[in-house]
Length: 183
Ligand code: SF4
Ligand code: SF4
Image (cartoon, rainbow, N blue to C red; front, side):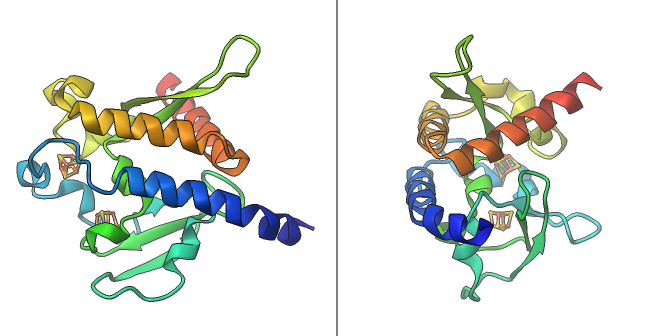
């Protein structure tokens, strides 16, 4: 049954995903190449070589075949949702092939709902995980980041939260990070 539901849901989810990836295709955290500030710190593999970016629901479909100039492998990872996937790269990729999580970093999408838990909308915030690798949060947080980039992340979030699969992944991430903040 789950397989049939996924087959039915995939086209709509993939459409939202494509649109969100497209919205974040060209915008960057700074107007100039922010990788020059830090030597591309967020793309560097960690000491295990298995750190990677969590893919959004159905995003693994973009990475089922080899991509020229992009050395990566996929690892099962249920952190955001059951049956999820992590993409592990070697630190270089064609820009147009970056996963959505890489396009959003060092921000993340926070979902805000009204008191009845409806009318959800997205806001962009600094990803708490960015503090460990990215110099931009220390340079003024959101104020250090291009307004075009922040708006694009927010617009992508508004689009994604209209899809139940993306909504689940975003809310699970939010819960996980909020719990970590409380520790
Ligand atoms: S670590 Fe931050 S400043 Fe460096 S490339 Fe990544 S997003 Fe840009
Ligand atoms: S997939 Fe590309 S953008 Fe993302 S961490 Fe790897 S090299 Fe960097």
